[in-house]
Image: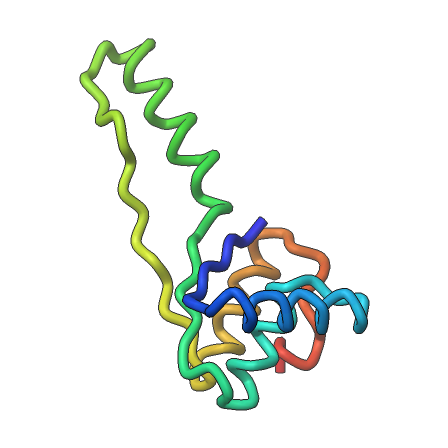
Length: 106
């Protein structure tokens, strides 16, 4: 799963969701298309695939190694723009996402 958070007015958010429903697309896919076309200059994506990995590491550290672990694990946002959209798409594919459109992988 890739969480996407953008700043929109309520009206803009409703329009974007309606577009996604009409086209049978996920909201994230519509947003990626906006980035590709240059309508949205940047997408700040969270590397959610790493959440499980980091969580298991922290559990192991706490239980097995008896280390103190932070209550919150900070994860850097990934800046996705038109220039690196292909790189982000390839990263998603490498993580095992199966719904990455092939045109983004070129």
